[in-house]
Amino acid sequence: MENHNFPQPVLPDKIYFKVGEVSKIAGLPAHVLRFWETEFKKINPKRTPSGQRLYRKNDVEIILKIKHLLYEKKFTIEGARQFLKTTAKESNRNKTDQFLKDLRIELENIRNIVS
Image (cartoon, rainbow, N blue to C red; front, top):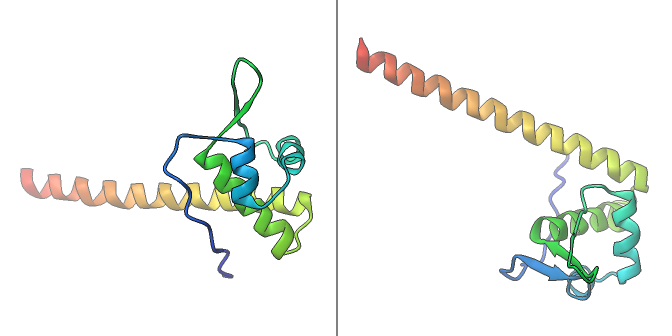
């Protein structure tokens, strides 16, 4: 399987990032970030009462993944959307598999203790 890891800048240890900060981190104009919000539902910044966007660290990480897919891997927007959906499903499947393995080991340990 191809390695889809990519270099990612170290993000400041903050809860929220303003659009200008995200623009600088990602090296993208703010209008691109706003457009991507309409194309990728995973990017979902909170809004202040005045309407200012506040991106969470997870939003910034997704933006960086999308930038990598579109600009470096030359994906289309639809291709990037499908790729993110597929990798999210794989990640969830791997987490579930690991959880079940851990649960089985724990149950076997309990059975050994009570036997």
